[in-house]
Length: 295
Image (tube, rainbow, N blue to C red; front, side, top):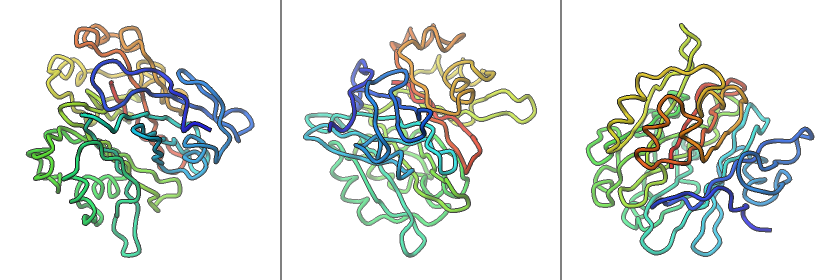
């Protein structure tokens, strides 16, 4: 059994070769390819099924290819799994980290993918995050995802010296909390300048006053025009990636940002962005955010 079906190919220089989205079928025991990818996985089968069964991200390797499988858990029910097939050989650079609580109540590194980031890998072996410390600890304490940019100068990124050496640019932290207040895991995706996992990252949440969706944290790197138009946006359910995630309570991916991300689709096209994926973030049964990655 392969780790996961290849899915939607990612254009340009990215750590991610392809993405795929699987959603739960009516039986509740199988994950079926949705808007990209192919195939069916039973819970517990392959990287996709294992993530869906265990409820936390999992990383599996096959030569120079690693599959990061990210489940979307509404309580103890898996609403879907998103896979990122990543290149780890050659000059590809980037990192994915899964942090879990240890016996001392701190976050320790449980699974990882480090491509070309030897210094960061060596340092991280000895790092632990108490609650509220560093990006993983803040995500844990907030019970909410967070995007952090300018890592090389950030006071909130404890491994800042490694960020400068390795040319890390931005990161997103995502909590997994199927049975709050207990934390199951925190996933960190770390971008490099050379081969980012995502060129832009956003966290969307519902504005309780207007019931529309707005960006609460984001990083756009050098894409300043996209940053300007995006921060003014508000979306209804069903609009854009975030609106579709909130409508379906499930992950969603597209290779048509021009069409799906009106009115800023033209800006995505000008910068050469084609693919995007939205990951729902649940705290228990409550959908609290959509993490959008643009590749």
